[in-house]
Amino acid sequence: MTKGIAVILAVVFLFVYTPLDAAEEIVLSVEEAVAIALRDNRDIMLRTEELKKAKARLAESASQFLPTFTFTGSWQDTRGYYTKDPAQTSTQATLKQYLYRGGKTIATVEQNRHLADVSLALLDKAKLETAYAVRKAFYTLLLAIDFAEVNKKILANTRGHLDLARIRYRNGEVPESEVLSMEASLEGVQQAYEEAVNQAELAAASLNTLLNVETDSRIRPAGEFRYEPQEIAYDEAFLGALARRPEIRQYEAQIKADTSSIEASKSESRPSVYASWDYYSRSHLAATANKNWNDYNVLGLTFSWPVFDGWQAAHKVKQAVSSLKETQLLYEKTVKDIALELTASYLALKDAIARIRSAESEVKMYRDNFSSAQEKYRNGIASFLDLSDSELKYNISSFNKKQAVYDYMVAKAGFDKAAGGL
Image 1 (cartoon, rainbow, N blue to C red):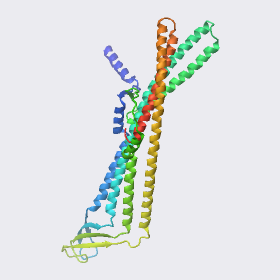
Image 2: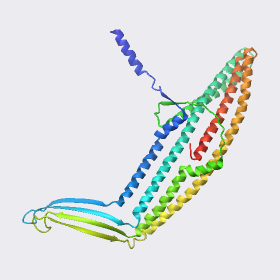
Image 3: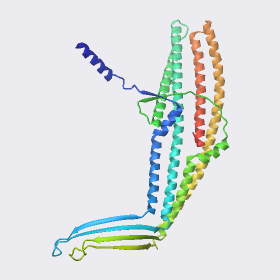
Image 4: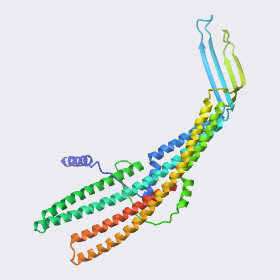
């Protein structure tokens, strides 16, 4: 019995005292991260709903081509007026079809069709920006993890130097000031390491937000920094951007929508014509108490023309024309902004390539130095701390190259985004 109670207590202890911060680890490549973001990102989901609304508005405007049918029925009991208290039942059915509305229906349908194209372009823009943001956040997390690891090695190396300084101080080989200086250096390195760890956590949180995953999930990026030089033609990229960028399609569709809006505004001052058929049925005559059913129908054609509306339609046309001019200006500005974005990302690519070449030279130099230090350490010429210093310099140079490759990969993703494709 006592043994059974002990087992139960052990199980309870296991569940109660399991660390709450045990996060689920998710290993993702950059392409997998982008795919998840394109599926679950909130901005993309919002734009998707906006597109659905735009399509529903288009269907709503197209329904104006169809006739309307209305049925009305009523029952009334009149008391204290006639010698008898008669009950009256009446029904009415109305069929109405617009034959001409000044071109408003056609213009409205065209406007909503182009606005749906605008919503689609905005959705594509959200996907493009999200893909770029995910790639940048993924590479940032990958670099932040390496940066924290390098700072951890620097911290261990600094502690080794501090231990050596304390030993030499006890042996009277160095003054106390050198020990104090090393202790101050250790504090600075410790702070730098903690900041690097915090940067990695912030980068992970940023990626979690973009992917819309649980906050207690921990994403481990799978991949490494690789530099694959590519020939990039700026002129071709610019022409491709004008054809592929969602912003271009957005404003082109908006210009068409604004043009249709002008036509819809003009229709406010034009005549309208509709045909109608009404059927009426009542249980008795309105002023008598007889019970005879009376039914009849009316076929009509109605012509309406707003001869004077206080220039309301004219002011609507002016507003629509101004909206069109604003959109045209935004279109021209967007073309120039895309050209500037391409130029900036192209120059960033060239700068990153130059930094990679410089970093590769340093890596080669420190790799040779580290190999020499290993040989000296094996031969007893160099100390372990000397070997550690040489290895640390090599690790730092390798990280500097990774950072240069990171700059290249982010710049390349930015250039691809500016060109309209990722």
